[in-house]
Image (tube, rainbow, N blue to C red; front, side, top):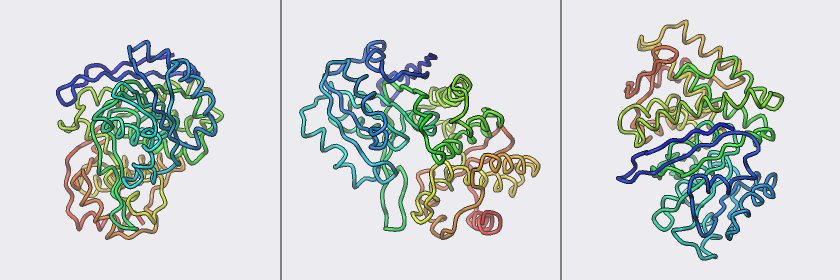
Length: 367
C-alpha cells in the first residue's frame, strides 16, 4: 500500500489536512485509517451511489461497522442529476431523520458526482462536517476526489445546465482509493476516466500513451501495473493543490485544460455525453485554438489528435447547438478563459479568444 499525505492546506484561515491512501483491498479497514489519522466522530453519515451500494454495500458497511458507531445511509441515483441543486433536499433527508452533530463524519462512496456532492454537503451541513471520500470510478480516483473543490449543478432551462455553479472549497480529511473497485467498471466509465488522464498526459507529460493504453484495457490489466499509473495522476494534482489550494495563482487553473468547452458540452443536455468524453473534445478544441493563433505546432496538434483517437475517445462535437455552446462558455465560472497548449507538458493559462475565432474553429474544425 502506498500512502500520500497532503498536509497543511491553508483554507479560509484554517489548516485542513487531507490524507490520501491508495492500494488494493482497503475497504475493509476504513475505520483503521480513521484511527491512523486521528479522525474521531460520533456517527457516520454514509452518502453512497445506488449502483455502487448494490455491488459493494456489504463490504462498505462491514468496514464502517468496525467503528461501533451508528450509520445513517442515503443512497442516491447514479448520474449528474443527483448533484443538481434541486435534488439536494432528497439526498440529506435520511440524515435529518436521525440525530447527528458537528462531530459526525460524512463518508461519500461513488464516482465524481458523489465526491462533488458529498464535499458540498460536508461544507454546508451544520456549517461544516469532517469527511471521507471513497472514490469508486477511474475519473474520481484520479481527479474528482482530489483538491477540495465541491460543486452542484443548476438547470437554467430544460435544455441548458450550468455545471458546478454552486460550490465551495472544502478539503476532505481522508481519501481512500481502492483500485479493486475498477474491476467492475463498465467500459464507458473507463473511457470517461481516460478523458481526464489524457489531460495529465498532455499537460504534464505523464502518464505516457503506453500507460494510457494499458488503462484502456483496465479490466484485464495487472493491478500491480495499474496502481502506479493511478498514483502518478494523483501525485500531479496533489502537488498542484498544495501550491494553489484556492485557485487564485493561475497554477491550479492548468487543471482546466479542456474544461471550458467540456463543461459547455455537458451543459447542453441533448449532448448526452460523459465528463471525460467532453474533456477529450475540449482538449482537441484547445489544441486547435492554440494552432490557430500560432502557439502550437501542427505536428504536435496531429500527435494529440491521433493519441486521443487511439484511446477511443471522441474528437468531434456531437450534434448540438453552437450558439448554446458559446452562451454557456461565456457564462462559465472560468469567465470564458481558455487553457491553451504550447507543447506537450507546457500549458498557457488565462487566454481569451475572440468570439468569432471560437465560432470559426467550432464550425470549421470540430463538427
